[in-house]
Length: 427
View 1 (tube, rainbow, N blue to C red):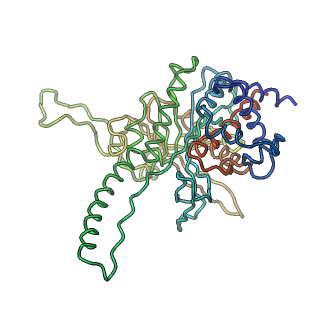
View 2 (cartoon, rainbow, N blue to C red):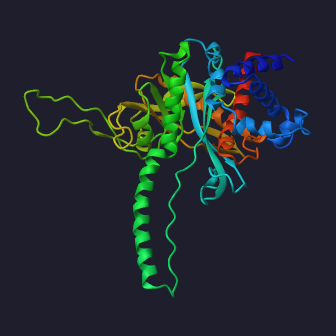
View 3 (cartoon, rainbow, N blue to C red):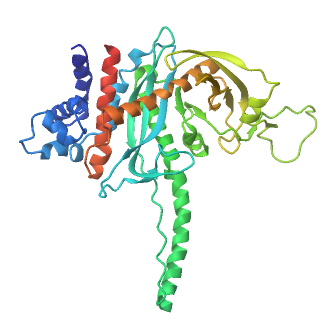
């Protein structure tokens, strides 16, 4: 009974997000109904929970398709209350990940054929789904290390760039005019493919993720307690590339996982003879360093130990690090820190098994290694959030096909879940 008043108090902050008090009241009622209804979490189910199944449903669906409100405004109400849960000494950590929501309707324009994340690594499967980008703020206990909670602060639709279809080849009885038209269409298709590859770099998943992080940085600046604080963004390998580093705000420190075979360079060594003038342009990169995998196997570099909290208990983590390093093909002249995490050992079926090693790049060499490692292990909470949103709350199950509703309704559902998490932590 203590949780409900706190949840209604958090949802009461949504009042400024809507132009009319009736729209706000309807949105608050639907937020509560989507959290408690049984079965598939559709709008019709929430209408039945509210006891309005025998009334006209038009106004209920217009809440998501016609009414004027922005999904980020709902998350801003939650974002403004997170600083009171963090101590001033704790870093400001956000996590980013993409997630698909499966769809069967053919009238949803944003739904595309995407790679199924549940497919085995040796066989690629496809699924018809909507792709969303989710950003969360990580909150953990103030005094001592403990489990973290990920509070969603953004859930944006991120459709892939549409690939142009090749022209249809004429049949055997086609005339010369048909073959000439086919040749012209094929030349136009090749030009469209070049534009498609350029659009992939500008409007692909990595570019959309970088813009989402930049927008989150601007939203954090509006919070008085976070105006001058550095934002740490913990991402996986799909967001640790050249596109993200070229678009990312300098006030964001990226902590991302990379491949084991990337080429890294050290800093430029000072000239031993200052009087000697070298020809050509000034060097930006120093000597070639070992790859992350070579560093892991190098016996001359000792392993260091660091305690971290993960999976409900404290672990003693072994790691190696080099700083500063430069990733020429990915981050250019940005100085970075490389961290190699030793595979964790565990016992199963009477045998000693090992997990896969991890290779991290930190966008700022001055970031404490222990805090960066702990932030990376806390990133797992965004995976827990996505499992709860899909399996328990049914995010993405609403049967809507309007372009506005397809984008708004899942974000509204996740914003209600974020308000529930915030209220639970306060209680």
